[in-house]
Length: 447
Image (cartoon, rainbow, N blue to C red; front, side, top):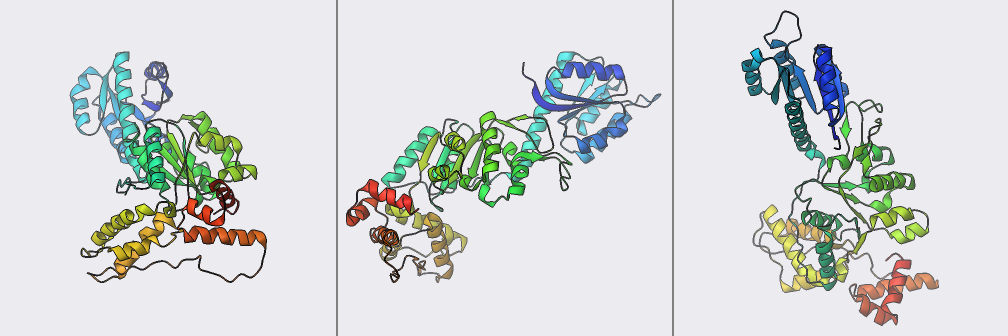
């Protein structure tokens, strides 16, 4: 039988009780600690992470009314309100123990105890402790809104959604590739919602926003005292996702020496907090995303090849908005309804002329840019007439200042893509290239 990863604290002034309880419980739980002096409880709990306390009710000679146990239970509850406490009582103290249950004890065990009853009580208390901790950890977990527009008329996007439907129920690693603003976060959460882990945490970690100094602490957590500002034990973001899904965004921004640590975590499914020697088993599903060309990064030795092959069990290329122009009216109306409600402008509407104007822009910022455009337009329009405030197109015509062939080639490709609003087939035909040749040049110029 595999031991459950949990830390049990037994507090009793009888060394024989401590020994026998520890030997029995050590068969089922990874760590069992003992204290013979109750005055050391609070110091121990401040320094150690404990899942359950097994507490005797009498410590002072000549006093057998159980008040010692109640006193120390209240002291523990002041420090750790949700920590399960099991009281150990003699037959004459049963009524007092029942009263203690009303005041916060999770259970009581009669001395001499039945080993099976002791195990069952402690095991239940550990499960309660885990549930309490998970509730407390939700502050580190992304809140799921489930308010997204996922319907699509685009063939390219329909293919992506079909692949997601197939891969979501599995635990396969997924790599989402696409430009900024194409909806990689939305699709990652959608994968989670379609999986068997949907009722467990979905944790979004933006690697691009983490400094190298904070990377290990934020992801793996740390033990109290591990470094100067480590004032208490901290479970990292990945540990908080136990049994759920971890979405590691901007994976291409991760420095090489940190890629090694991440590779070890993904391979071994074990996590060690900073300052600890104990390994914690990890049961999570990983989804990754980047707007980087990882194949190019691998060839330039900026990204580990073994990590790349580890994270892309299933690789999904998310089309840009200019490649799914047929979805712009639906997305625009979705955002319009959202911001009409938010800013109390219920009469605003997109007419055909405004919709056509939206489809003539290249949207380099993709869906995110469209979202901001509609919000800005709603805010600055009067209550009845929507005034569309389009972004300034950065690809406006510029004078040619040199005749470098490569630079001219890049300019022509950009112009063709703009002219045909991102349609690769039409742009390739206009340039006299095959689709494959155009894709190679787009990759070369990182377009």
